[in-house]
Amino acid sequence: MTTVQKIKEIEDEMAKTQKNKATSYHLGLLKAKLAKLRRELLAPTGGGGGGGGIGFDVARTGIASVGFVGFPSVGKSTLMSKLTGTHSEVSAIDFTTLTTVPGTLKVHGAPIQILDLPGIIEGANDGRGRGRQVIAVARTCNLIFIVLDVLKPLNDKKIIEGELEGFGIRLNKKPPAIVVRRKEKGGISISNTVPLTNVDHDEIKAVLSEFRINSADVNIREPNATADDIVDVIEGNRVYIPAIYVLNKIDAISIEELDLLYRIPHSVPISSKEWLNVDELVDKMWETLDLVRVYTKPRKLAPDYNSPVVLKRGKCTVEDFCASIHKEIAKQLKYAIVWGASAKHSRGQKVGLEHVLEDEDVVHIVKK
Figure 1 (cartoon, rainbow, N blue to C red):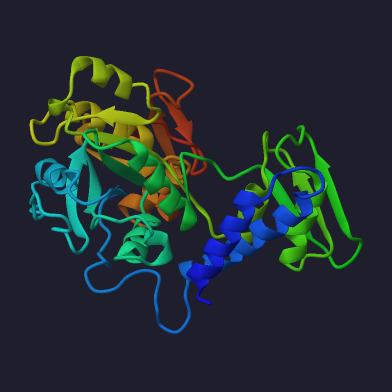
Figure 2: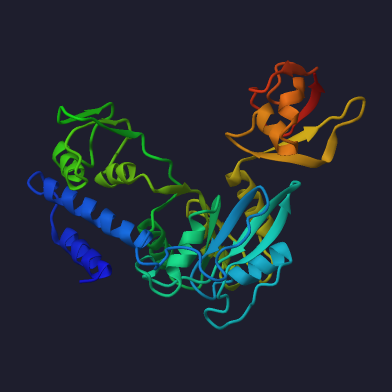
């Protein structure tokens, strides 16, 4: 029996098993077994390769990367070509794009790499089509655009989410506040600071047992935690990526239908063909990427507002700022003067390497 067949068998058994106190342990075992089989597909042995391949490995440029994911012929290539000026084959025929096509979009002075990925099909995470390679590239992106055709059922959204979830991509989620600390002896100890509404101790113990964990301290601080969250923490190979649902071809629907689309969380309705509402999409992309622009101020000169140093939130200290310019600057730094949101005074604040910068701060470096 193949891995895909085993997965289908377990999914069928889970679907027909009613969840209650008597079945919670059994369901926990099934969920853990399913995760282990998914892992085999994620990193198959024997040279099958879950990622890469000719045309899929591209040199990374820019401060962040955005991957276009969607079914064939939803308008990804048209949007890519108009946003970046990079030619990505456009056609009404399915599967026109067969490789990853990279391009660059400059937003607020920051170069953002755009990756147009081949259209995926249902069953991609089980290896159908080029789905495994496409999703492997998507796992490395800072943001995913899930491009949907509004003329087709939005059931497509659910299918694509399922394909990405099956490959360990968690969309618009943060890592669960759960800690599983293995120990040599003492058995399983479970503590929680929030009510366990979707999982019980038996199900947790079943998951741990399937992963051969006989002694561990489990601490749960995640509201509405599930057995799947426990599996994700144990597996440790999940990626948590923000996603924007790009609802394309709004030029073909009514205003009333457009109002309904705006109710979908994390969505931006657009028309890549007629170039409608694309500015809102770019603004949403910038907001979601959460980048920090820092302007340099040379001695006795005005700040340079044309070429910001762009940093990622969480890696935007003065030391990160120095390293992005030249690796030797931090070693030569005596102090920095900062103006802007992170400074305590409007006249500027003298700070050290550990100071955290905010968007549109101005920095002057003073060397030793």
